[in-house]
Image (tube, rainbow, N blue to C red; front, side):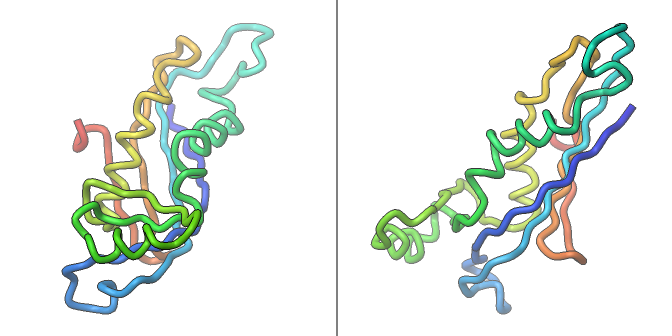
Length: 150
């Protein structure tokens, strides 16, 4: 069985070597969809009976591990020294420094990496992360799928 939870967050980024407007500092209303697989819990009397995982737990874990850190932050590539240096001059600025250029593809892959261990067989029902879909805009997204990411 597959289940999916969608969350949204706002963040800024830039693609430093890009040939279009994306080379400038800008932001997006990102959405992330987290898809998990697992057996439906059948244990009588369990609060999660009939579920793969409680959707509120999917949200809580995603917020703790990823969304709270990225929401209203500037996601910047470690090699983008100009922007890294500039953001360091802003007191208490929320900056997330990444080892990759913050494209939708790289952010989806990074999110998958961060979340993969967080959703490991929590209920003894073979629970695991299958896919992270990261929307940069309503019309543009990247999927990081377990088979492609491992």
